[in-house]
Image (cartoon, rainbow, N blue to C red):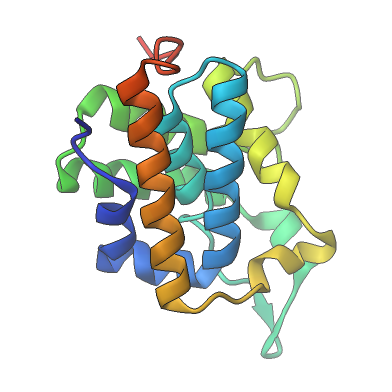
Length: 182
């Protein structure tokens, strides 16, 4: 039994606020990609899906003259840092196991190289899965952040993914290769 489900996260007002800002459809797509990649690479599907879902929770809106400025974002954004902190706080408030909350947050921190001074970071398998999941859903110019999804459809997608995670965990198929931080 999981301490916190994706539905618990989805329904929290903090998640709603920031995931709608960065794109709920993108967050859900990345959560699904992370789930499938986690199974493929023997990584904890629950943590991977949560990190995929919350990976962009730290986004700030970079506007100039009332219009989104993608170059300003690319030069100045540190959303993985803010997102890791915001996700950790949210998960702990919801009652997540602290070790899992930390692993989730670190996967969010390292889901992109955009804020790093160099690209030589060595990721854990969990962190790599979340990075690949995000890359699978990216669109040029950040368009993936603007895809729309109706709230009820989003909720049903999350419920379906929660059931898939529970099924995998009950069958013992994945979860042993968690790669928890020390």
